[in-house]
Image 1: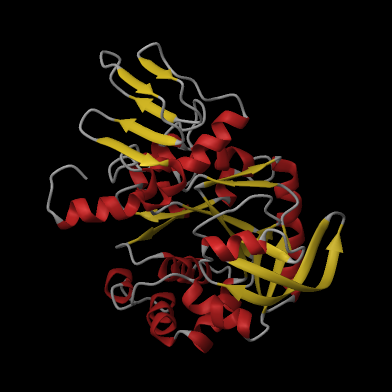
Image 2: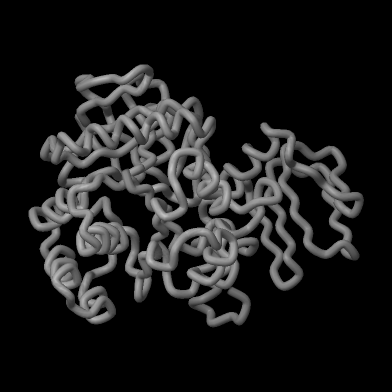
Length: 352
């Protein structure tokens, strides 16, 4: 098994904390270590540094190397430019194939997420490794959510294929793309509905074969890279897009399996999810210069110790003051922060 930590994005939904020059996965959001470091340390309980790979972009390589210097330079899979997770996933497969590992299963470990307890995650990886050596199907992960999780896909699990201990593997009956609030509320009460967490696991050969069948415009440049073509030239030919452009068709064709996660999966995609985790773990702290009177369930972050923020009678707000930016939003709409950032860029304002 080859674990690949994928960390090429900028975390726009956690702007203005997360910026292009300091994306959220390199920040100490939930303690003294970054999500990148925490995910690496979790993998180190099973794998050596030279067995762990990093998928990222050129801008983020120096930060990743500084935070985890033990990983060999040759284990960095570097995107020449950002083209979304579809091409990035394909590049991982092409890189490993070219390196002489076409039939060694790999798993994508998304850096924005936390998996607890770690031994249960490792147990799942071992199950997926065994599956991917026998199956040509696309293997992914999902969990039974107890509360509404917006902005992610859902999978309706079908017949149980196998189980190893408490790790269940199922056929996928249906894929639901980016569920609405109404759909989500219906899905969380269904026993067979799983929130989709990715954890893509296949061999490089099988993933490239999947792209050959469903996305030739990605497959052909990738095979040129495998055969010695210039990465920058060929990667630029791949149209941007999410991996779901392919996997949606794979699910519909019955060519996928979902592993029900045996651990707690936390996605730090929004201020709402960050706030929930920090408060559940007793990690949310306010300072003396933040005054909240008669308010409930607010999330306030203030960088300047010489500034004062006072809230009176307001509930469920996110307030983030980084000095150059002040963000205020309803907590349940914090998933729209990225849209605000797009508008700022459209207006050509300096602070992004």
